[in-house]
Image (cartoon, rainbow, N blue to C red; front, side):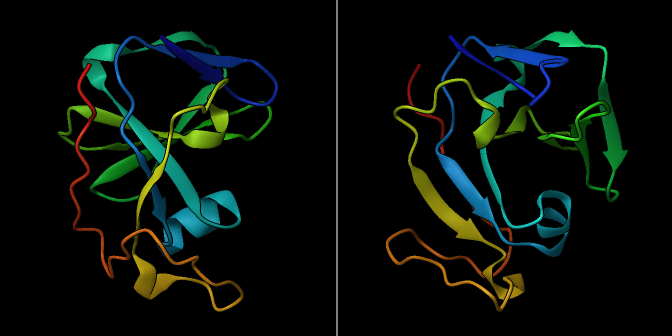
Length: 136
């Protein structure tokens, strides 16, 4: 079981299954939404549940996805692609991140000039990637 939530505690969630390794997204939308880059794990929709969502707001950022955030404290929480069976979760919102590792960096062609990507994880120019979930 994994749990997490926003800075003020108004939005809380739980995950009953495994988490996907972390994907670091450097796309322009993620950089604007977070102020830097998005470090996101993911959960299968069937394993994910909202415990409290009274302040959860969704912003439709494109025809492909919407982004969830807390309407009270502004915390970036989720990225949800249309028709996908998973929900991406801002890794920093988890209560316990032990065991999570970075799988790759995506949209590196959009990365900001003010920082460098540490070597080690694969770097993908666009968003085409596949990172499997670990076995339950």
